[in-house]
Image 1: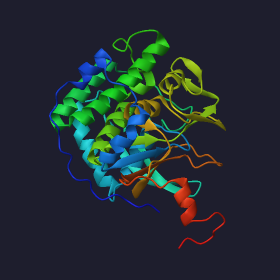
Image 2: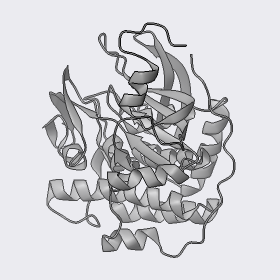
Image 3: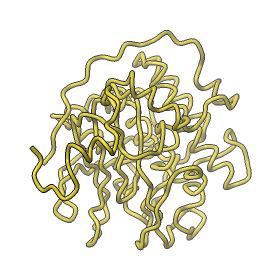
Image 4: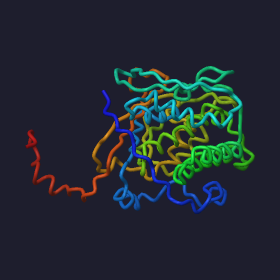
Length: 328
């Protein structure tokens, strides 16, 4: 059972003083904000998203979880789909969602079905497919086109730029080249472009001001890529997770995909426990693989940050003495 957020108010666009793409080229956009500055940003934040990747994260799982925050996920998906139709991607695609269960917990499963390939299954470890490849420059041109067509805010364009640039830099590091020369292989396919840009649009339409994330699980095993078998996490994913709190789990298969890691690198303000907030909504995005032990789901919490100073442990102990079983 889910509690859904009300429709978000329109976001007021501040004046754009710099081009995020140009800033990224110059290396002036940090992939993650300083966690010490987060309390101040939360104080002025009206809508906060906390990501709980207890079973990992993939691009389709993140977009599905954001859609699950809405009362009418199908209508929201149609709005996001319509916004991206002007990108004229080489491989036509169809988007669909359905409600599924993973270990008895319900969530939304997002499918990106392309004309020449099977439905996208990024959240299914070890089942990457061959797709049409595009590079960093082409995807950034799509971001610019989306900005102009949809009158996107500077915040939205900056987030998209950070995600795409983070992924390009990680892939370039793996292959010993530059972001401009890289072709993303699986993560540059139509489905992953839709996951990345669709997620950024969904965040903006929810008027999310700040984003935090809990520890990211690290599994083991191998994943099949264009270059053969790669260790889990995949090389690009490992680079993207540098500086991110992780926790080792005794599970095999890919729990964090390159696109999922790029979304974390580009969108998360700080990797911390969930901050104090009034909870307004909970969303679940499903991966395609069935895991008999752990629900293959990504959970997100939408809330309003608590403006008051959090109570100290001492004051909590006075109100609720240790050993008390009833809260009055």
